[in-house]
Amino acid sequence: MTLTAVDWVVVALYFVVSAIVGVWYSRRASRSAEEFFLSGRTIPWWLAGTSMVATTFAADTPLAVTGLTVKNGIAGNWIWWSMVMSGMLTVVFYARLWRRAGVMTDAEFAEIRYSGRPAAFLRGFRACYLALAVNSIIIGWVTAAMAKIVGMTLGVGKWQATVGLFVITGAYSALSGLWGVLVTDFFQFILAMTGCIALALFALGAVGGMAGLMSALNTKYPDGAPLALVPSLDSPWMPAITFFVYIAVNWWASWYPGAEPGGGGYVAQRIMATKNERHALLAALWFNVAHYALRPWPWIVVALVSMVLYPGLDDPESGFVKVMVDHLPPFWRGFLLAAFFAAYMSTIATQLNWGASYLVNDVYRRFWAPSRGERHYAAIGRVATVVMMVISGIVTMYISTVAGAWKFLLAIGAGTGLVYLLRWYWWRVNAWSEVSAMTAALVVSLAAQAWGLSPDDPRGFAWLLLVTTALTTVVWLAVTWSTPAEPRERLVAFYERVRPGGPGWTAIVPRAGEDASLGAGVGQWLLGCVVVYLGLFGIGAVVLGRPEQGVITIGVAAALIAWLVRATAARTA
Image (cartoon, rainbow, N blue to C red; front, side, top):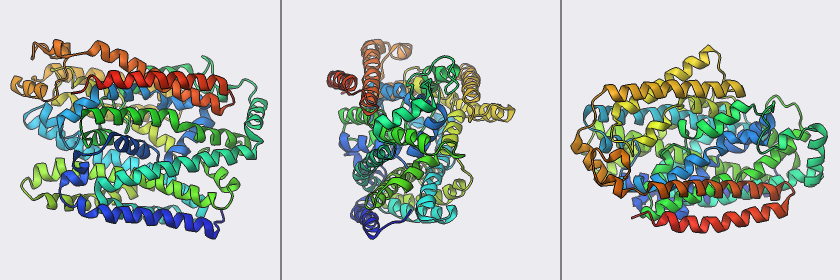
């Protein structure tokens, strides 16, 4: 792709603004670990929620959605659309609990919920596992996607692109802490969405508009399978068992960054950085609406266009970039390239800051240097950022497809979700429950893949999740009942701190049943799922040429969400 002087000016302006923000917040980030990792717990809901959305809008996401759509049709996106149900659980039940917990990381949660050496082991084990293993895979696939974009647009090799991307983003992340990440996330999200919408419009222009696209797809695929939002039972694009696993198992059983059952990861970090419980809830709600309903359709449109323009690509994910290279005019080339840099930096800055929070708060301060000054911990946060950047750079070189890495991470986390949901609401869960679930999920998943269940095959992926979830659940429940319960005093202290309520606590706190409003919560959760899906498919109807249906659906979703905000806010302190 040839960039004009105007294109280069647009890209340069983006980096100048990012650098100014990083320098501006560097002094504030140096005050303490809480400022560096949680911005002093003063973040408003709209900024925290937008930051969550921007983090999930990485350079990899449009490419992965393109690959899923080309291989499995629009319905292929149920692999992540199903996570709406997990996300709404966080909105209705868990956002307020995370804010009440008052911890810095979700790994620190282990030592307020559990006790003794098992709790300390779990905290350190989980921190290292997420920061050095899982986080490196996430950063690796995001960087691999961005390196693919840079390579196809600027002709730069993968390792040269990887080094350059890490140097720029690592320096920015280490300098500014979470405040810089949050503020730049806000304008990065706007920039990235604008660029992708523009690309979708130019892509449609290349195939004669939406009418031309629909005509070409219907000619090539008379059964209309690629355009189906819900696949038929005998669909070769999306087998029935795979669709069933997505909507009935995947969303509660698998741990996945940004859609963790019960919250967690950087979502929990943003929730814990908010001003209060109400802001925590609204941040999670805005994130789920924007993440699932507002973002996907420009990517899907480009994916469908790529099926018409570039049929039979060996790497379907590259179709998105090929549309960008071949059909964007000057200025918009630079704008979208800057938008991709924005999406990339937003995600990587979050992952580096989030991962460093584990290494500093849950490993270094907890086990090695518990009594140093706050500025010292902030400085160590910058060192941890660089360490993770180097490890992730090595991982990047071994990742070939983004969707494959997505499915791999889902598979090795399958079966852990239930313990993360129940640890808040069932007193009997202990530290060994979590350790055994994480270990069993990893071992069973890798063994099943070695046996021949491939995450790249739709049926293989479905069976992989089912087998891993079933065996992992059996393991952690057996371990839970065969190991001692947590001491009563620790359980009571935890309950008084977060006040979850519910019948799972009545054996320890008799009034727990009275504290709960689980029935109302379940109703609000179901309504929240309906709202997000109505928004998603309403916008889809408008985009795909059914505006009347789409406008009505969106209107119903808007009316329902206003009631949902009032109802859920009433359940916060």
